[in-house]
Length: 79
Image 1 (spheres, rainbow, N blue to C red):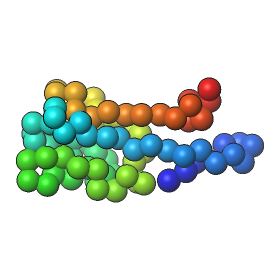
Image 2 (tube, rainbow, N blue to C red):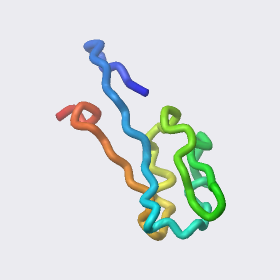
Image 3 (cartoon, rainbow, N blue to C red):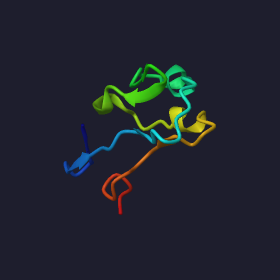
């Protein structure tokens, strides 16, 4: 997905990412994601709908294992 800045530049967004080695399958990220972007497949969280991610960080804040990573491109950070 992409955003548009006030001067009409397109910005490529990067969804949350699950660090599989850290995920313990608790399901909190899935439960707290307001858009149902994250889903559990067995005992592993996956980003099923990456283009729908708002980058709100709810999934990352509630992950006690630090298995959710948010990445922002320099253009998203206005750098």
